Length: 149
Length: 417
Image 1 (tube, rainbow over the protein chains, first blue to last red):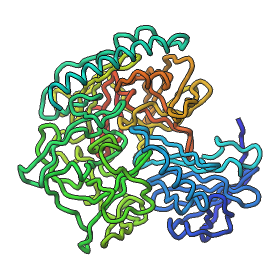
Image 2 (cartoon, chains in turn red, blue):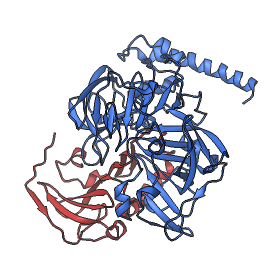
Image 3 (cartoon, helix red, strand yellow):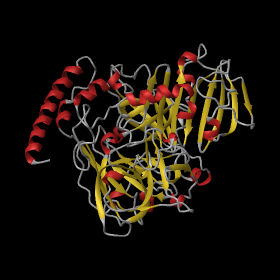
């Protein structure tokens, strides 16, 4: 089990910096406006940095590698975020795959969509929904899906 | 369906049963399944004593009773009566999903025939909602409805009318359910322990992803007072309003075509809903979760009749199915019965036995009630979690205590079993 060690925890209340999956953290993307996020904080791990913001009862965490490329996004809280804002260039593939798949599995409270390198997972229950989206080809070496929490 | 068709259908079902039996016996060779499964395939197994009272609602699983041909594996169905508010103009709607993992009543527009009253915001614009679930969402306007649960008195409450053609679905709402046949239900009765579907966050923030106001086809997020949010209708009852009791019979290892149990309104309010021998496990009042220890791992958990399996993190003992048509379900090669522990915020614990079977095999049985269906919860979000779905309810009596209420076994939110 790959254990990533916290070596720094920085708290900042500056203007939030968001990015889309596959984009860079300094490309302040439209999702910041769409989600109207606030209370940003940044956590640095050995191989990646996590940018966390909250909006309307939901917490979103964006995982960036050493080059500042966002390789994963995870969320939990009141609502699933607007993926048209967070998936960036992956969104078109996601929409195509969603249309190609048969409807959501009746009764299942977890779903996984694979679209080329993109994986999108939804789960949880009303008042505490959870999910994540990631591209494993962008993961820093040694980082696994289990680290995306 | 006329009698001849029904007879034909029964012959087909019998054929399927025999085929499933043969498949089951064949498939179980070397799979480590219990050998006592044969009687469970062809009929429902456990039955409960008959229960009467104004607070009694039936729960059915399978194409029986309150379910219909849209119903699916491990879907607990009930019936709800909906009326034009404060009138005797009512209709009874079946195939309503009993859901302890959500809060509030939602019904497809296409099955509603009685007129309901649109709920508006303070400037007279209609209110709509995107109700989000673990997977999928429901979109549509909020309307005032008279609701009758069991034989209780009619209460007038906001409900969601599910209609994906209403105004324009906000992009944040994803791909909401479009009709009963693809959703598998005519509506959802959210009977979890929260009083509203959203709660205090929607009172103070407008970008809550839940409530909207629409001008023409354009909808924008709004904040909404608790009194205008969609409530768990049980909280609105004059009596029997502190929670529910769900009682389901046992289901054999290889499933049952159908099974039936009860949803009783109230906890300790009538002779038929008094807890006995239960342990009360409180949950946190934000996420509505407690802790479960399963497979040597401790994690957040919730009990959700609206989930049709045990959703737990896949691991080497419980791997994902490799057959792509069962992707997301669990296919252990050696199913075995094991013990899990649930622990409330109050420190109380209760153990339960569970089994996860090979979904590739289980789905071949063509039965509706499966006590050992497992899916992957894939540890998304903040940390690993488990979702104790409908199989958890088989063979148990489970109480769900509403927030801000008390009963002889505690103060909500809690589960007791």
